[in-house]
Image (cartoon, rainbow, N blue to C red; front, side):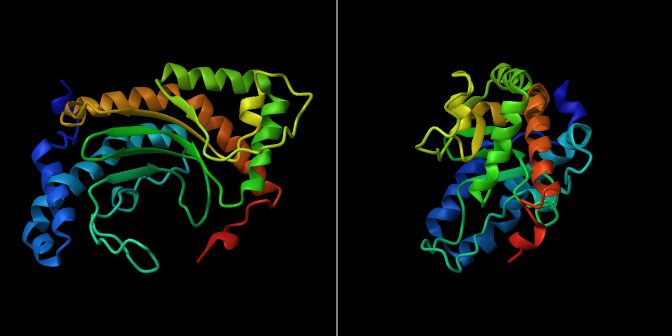
Length: 242
């Protein structure tokens, strides 16, 4: 059924193997010789994921950028100013988000794969970590809504992750069930799997649609906090332009 209704027909093991070989060789000659195969086997299917999810993503957020070319990472890397001088990737990703220059740091959904695993989820990272306290404020103002959003992420199969936390308890009087989230400087709700057969067929689209839709209450919560930041001038687009 899915094979007929989606553009995406899967990312095949042999194409992932070629992507890995391309990184291993790290050679412009090898890349140019295999460029069309890499495009058709890796880049095009990744763009097709965006095409197949664009309707849902626009429904979730009508400001969501759904351009498949801009949403997907490139196989070759910009090594300027980067310690690693390897020019080619063996992992690929895509972001479902608002246009980054108009809405810098906005929360986003993502999908990514590596040679032996894939994952997807919902992320809210900010360059200016102090701005994340606006998320804390909304959690304290709407605790029931927040906990319902967390539960929605669990139902979507996502695990809560946080890379950076405040060491000090900033909200000592807050309910204990909220405190793990009130220490956060960023947040992710993620799912990861090593079953690569699941990205080799169009049923991946059904899986992503279901998870992203179920987690919608958390995206809405994050967007409300983000728009509060924008309205209060905590985040300004000009501050994030290179």
